[in-house]
Length: 111
Length: 116
Image (cartoon, rainbow over all chains, first blue to last red; front, side, top):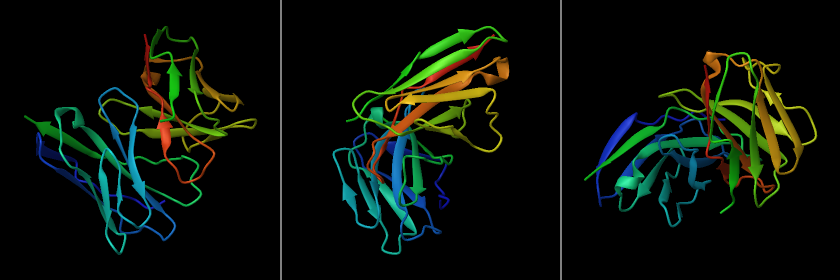
C-alpha cells in the first residue's frame, strides 16, 4: 500500500472550513484514499473515501487531484467537536478492511 | 451505520494474568477482523488479522503466543493477552468491514488495558 504524508498539526477557527492535505505520490491505479479521524481515547471514525472522483457526504468532502498524487479533506464548517487526529490512508483494491495508519494530522479547532 | 462493539472498555489486571477482549460486529457479518494497539501519543499499530474459522495472521514483531486471537463466528473475534506485563498496558482497538470489498471499516470503541 502506498505511503501517505500529512502535516503533523493544523489549527482552524470554529465555523471556518478546515482543509487537511495528504500527499500520496506513490499511489497506484487501484488504490483508494480513505480518511478516518480519532477523537481522544476513542476508536477511529470513518469519514470518507474515494478512488479518483471527488466525493461528498454529510461529514466532509474529499478532493482528489487529477494525477491522484494528493488529496484534501474538507470539513466545511468546523466545530470544536471536530478537534481530532485525522488519518489519510491509502489501501489497495480488494481491501478487506486492513488499514495501515500513519501519524495523521492533529486538527485543533479554536473558538 | 454499522456498529462494532468491544468489551470491556477498560480493564486493570495483575501482572502475570491473562485478559480477554471481545470484538463483535453487531449488525453485519465479518469474515475478517483486525486488531490494533495504540500507545500514548502514537498512532494505531496493526497487530493481526483475525480470520473466521482459521488462524490469525500476525504482523511482524507481534508474538502470536502472547496475543491469542480466536474468530469462532462471523460476528465475534477475541484477543487474549496472556501473562500480561506492565509493558502490555495499551489501548487495544478492533475493526471489521462488511463482506463488500473497498468499503469502510468500522472500529470498536477500544479497550484500555492497564497491567499493574
